[in-house]
Length: 589
Image (cartoon, rainbow, N blue to C red; front, side, top):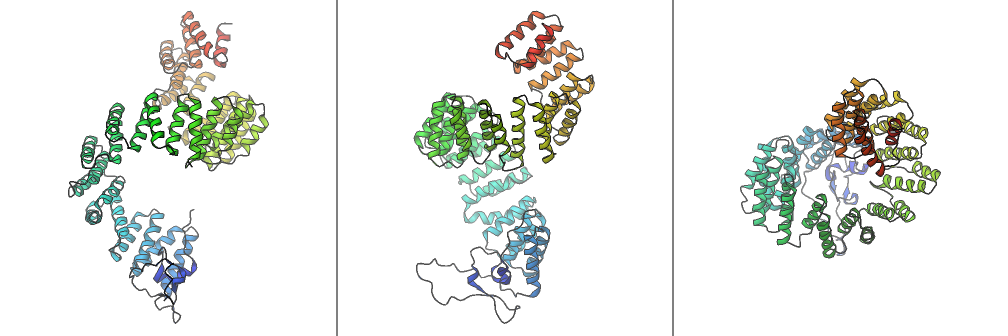
């Protein structure tokens, strides 16, 4: 369990004057020597600090508290409990102290601990005490308003929000947008924002908050209308423009692109909008125009790492490896926030350029982050290609992930390496050892099931896939794998069809699931239905195994010329596919 950050023991002795106050030094505090019941007073500096030293701001006029044995004891109990991970004890004790002392510093500490413990009711009570005893604290009022909104107490929160908005309405409405997004009752949130914003008819931030709350409530037309007004009130405001583009993209990517082009024509310096526009073009497969936009961005912002990375990845996606290499190499010179990502894609570029040693060096430079496992897996694959299987296995075995998910992926990578080397028993053993470490990993269960199928361990396959389904009830691929195996390798066709029907319900347009259903129908003797499913699957993805199955159905129906043409066409692109070759050996010896 996570522990609370506790105060030093000395702070316990000066509770009344310094509890949880940031910036207060121990040297500024002394304890009255006469009695522990006496109030603790700030120390008096003997001399005026030199002009070169920073001036210490005067502390707020907090209420004086008597450091009674009862208060001291409760404070120590709370802090020690927090240090030892007994959060509920720390929380209840601090809340009791807050009720007893009505000191805003203690109430604030009680609220923080209650929030840490996810006790909304305790946090709300403590924050009420904090806000009541420190009425001029903006943070206290903001925290109280947020907690009230989380609880749906709109009537109580509204006057607090009205007061907060008066000081800095522009900033307040931007914060308000974030608060409203956490309310479960989106209609109540929308109505509240509209009432608050009505008092600021000329403020664009108020229109932005209106748009956000309308979007959260599913009122997209009203949201876009509010953003149009915001554009009039504050022309070229990118935050409002980006929200409008996102809303338009929900229904029409072309409308979103048209708006972004219009926005950029009027405000060509809008970098965030141009970056979003370029990314949307990539998602729309409009690579030529996207590249033009990224080229402009690299010219307008020549030493921007984010722009350089995006431009490099686009060049890689378009197959221009020379440009990708140059852009990514330059990006490293701009101190990117995540250099490991840049190194990984430089490795990808080097592989495409048939430079395995350079690629391996780039992958080795990936030290942390999301690409750590992928980089080590590619290093291992390059070692295997170089005829160094022992080094490849050792590399993966000696790599330590940053979390359980990465460690699971490393085990999968080791097994995949062995499987590709046709060392199937060793791959199975690696996955079995991995499941001893991570018995509830659905990914490892699925992979071991696939390895078990190759070794004819169908009992292991079935047990693993059924457990994977329990752990991940919406895993269409687990249902598909089990259903296909039962249809292909056993006589349990009715059971197989039930499993495959579930897989198809979860993922109705998956070509591999459609292929499994078609194959099961073929095994059940229903040739027309089998052909229907397999033709649909092959249209979605002309995979050689789907071609093998579809060809066999056509062969069984007497359409042998069509079957032969289909197999021959698939063989040209996949001459080594085992399923296709086995089908041909069996039917056309």
